[in-house]
Length: 87
Image 1: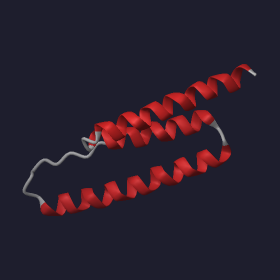
Image 2: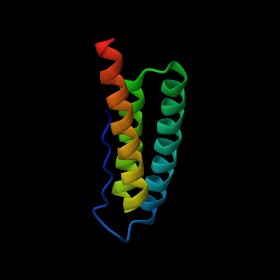
Image 3: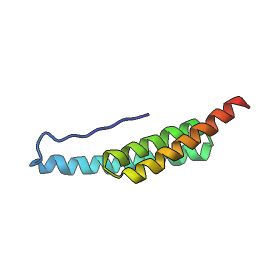
Image 4: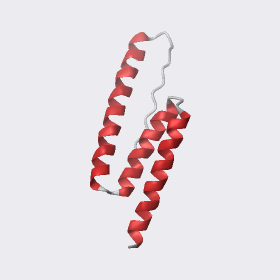
């Protein structure tokens, strides 16, 4: 699971703000592609990890309801993964 946190040392640094936005867009794109790839494989443990990354991104941006929605999906995928292991 990846954890990325971007923090500015100055709110007046426009270049840093622009770079941060570009980085966030790249991360969103990356995490969505990884999720889709994992979803196609049906590997529930990897799906859960991908959903957790997306949930963390939402949480860090203050989108708590979306974050909770993805954490719940990750939990469900983890339960499916555990069930797969017992078969």
